[in-house]
Length: 363
Ligand code: FNR
Image 1 (tube, rainbow, N blue to C red):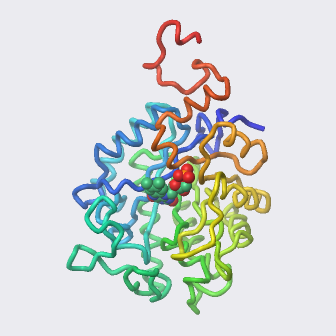
Image 2: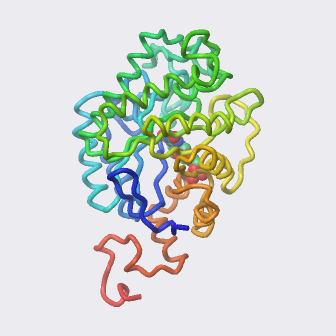
Image 3: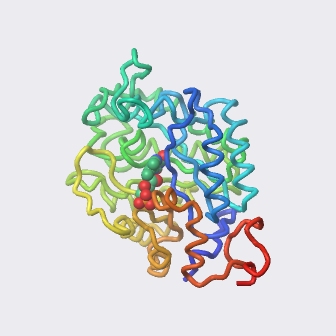
């Protein structure tokens, strides 16, 4: 079994190790124009310098109305491409793979940023909000009532994902991840709890996953063949009658056949209440099941905080990489600590050369 410090190659892209930074919204496009700022450079750059193999930029909206809040970043115009290029150049210069999560918030759009007054509350149009969209008109509890997307509008969103992927390529990203988790637009279409459509985009598993598969096909048509495409799924809704791990596994098999290289397995987010067994590594069994059934590589995420725990995820064959969220906020150089904890000396650990000096280097 590989070490978490061993490289992983997907298509023509090699990550120096299997410790990847999970996508985390920063709500820091301060001017509301979707343009990343110095904050993103420092936040992502610090984790690249801290030894992560792949650094995933947060949920990045493919159209303005696909933002969660007015302060989300985007990839719907060229000013954003220029600003992201500075980030990807730095991340790559530190030896990490620059990646971006492409997103549409769907019926969970038009919220106040958590950094602002009333964070997380729905914004009216008068407050700078906008009309959310979804598979139907059922709101996410407590949020604005969405408008059901027409089939023409679904085609527009598919095209927007592809256009954003083209911009991601020009911005220097080597990996794109499609956000199909956490109750956002594509997950809302997958789950029978939120998708009650009777057209080709609802009904059975093939109908509910049609939108996501079309997004993947459209991205693959413009995204370089030597660069990987990832999908983040909620492996389950954790709700009776909702999206299940068996559906996730079957869908992943299909996604693999459509050119998806790895599925990043999270869970939940499509309902206000769910029976979630939160605890260390609680989502790892979902990644394991999906990997076993589909044969597609997986990433495990969720309360993975210790080196030995992360290594056990790989040793068990549950996943091919681990993604770290909150622990990476506390410890931007978590991979360097993990190397230390696993007894790997500094020369074999992913230190930036600036940190190597004198006798310490030989330690
Ligand atoms: C997140 N998470 C998240 N997930 C995602 O798919 N896209 C995103 O933009 C965000 N944004 C975000 C912001 C912040 C501040 C946090 C803490 C989390 C979820 C994240 O990627 C991860 O799946 C969870 O945090 C669980 O992993 P940890 O934190 O237990 O390692």
